[in-house]
Image (cartoon, rainbow, N blue to C red; front, side):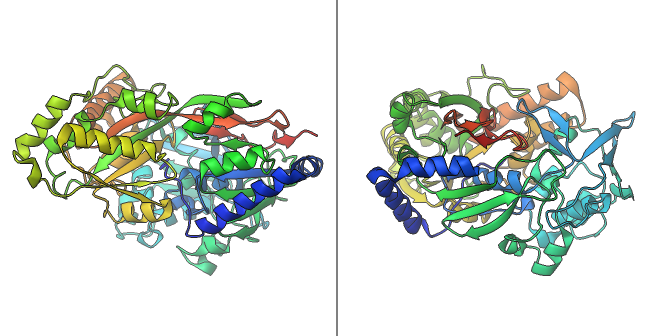
Length: 539
């Protein structure tokens, strides 16, 4: 899951509105509103760190904030439970003896929220469409690469995804080019959820999401009633949902760019719960009822544009890595709310190697590495570190800037950006030195390493290219079991040592979930709502 959080340009309006709500609640309006919402089963859901849903199309490479809405509106063949185990949703399945052919048996009566039927052909359309050049998906070429014919569709050579066939309305057959141990887990990713062909053909491949309100775009437990950009999205139960029904009558999802503003608004009674609490606010939050903090499968990482000096030299990337005191960053700046990271893949993932030391903090070594390329440090080209301001508290980039100045003698310019703009620039590969917050699509090293670090990956923001890494990943995908994990561990070590990504820390998620919000919890991906049937508001 590409965990960039996103917003649009109405942040001033959003912050002003939030501040006004805090003021009004402080003047005494909160309790009555809370009771009214509970009796009416209207959940006030702050989508923290964003000013809007930037990527509602599951094929667009949604950020974590967008995925919160996507998970309510869309659903698919399979889903993950709280412990990330694969569960049937719209289908059961059989697997051939050679582990290359998957046959899915769809439940009868599944429709989009406007009543349009979902058949096996709907899936053929959706998976093919994601690969078409016109869809401009950054993730489909990698996530679907194991399917026979995927490369031909993505290259424009064919419009037929040969490996995906509708045997009849209720039977979908998928043929892979090789066994893929992660394939069922992969199908829990929203890219593979069925989309309404009629809506896309009516409104356009890249613009249909602008017309999602009031239209039957998904098969999930909710549909969009209204969408006020920069303010909120109102979701209501999908009357055609095939699963257990939600007890809620409405979810009002408010977009709140600033986490501290969200926390203050929660304390003033404006939201029913709050999450993504800043390290400084956690000092207060941990004393409040319902506070919870849990390690999640998410890492904060830095990347370098490998075609822009000075980062076209591995020694310079290694110098910047060795100049960072990650323990001090985690303790003094982030208040021990994260774990310093020497690896890309976080502990708890299959194939994780938490004891690998990586590039450790060493100021003398950092300076030596830099001077091996630039003996005169004053000749180092200017360096700008760009980052999404909602994901990094201002103290963190400032501390990094000071570490680089102290160890390397380089004054790095800081460039905080709003996330939608930041995501646009990373997709255009214009960021010289940037930040990525990456969490799991599904718990397998494939999605950490293949999706963003292969030289052929559209998500390889820094154009990092290491033939040994590519070769090792290819070998891993042609093996299985412990041998596969061992090869992925080798590939990760290559990426760490050559600084394809520079790991900073492994994340935890924090939230305040009061007892009145029933059924909501945290798991290793963050907020966990299940299928929403267990979510309700107690009086």
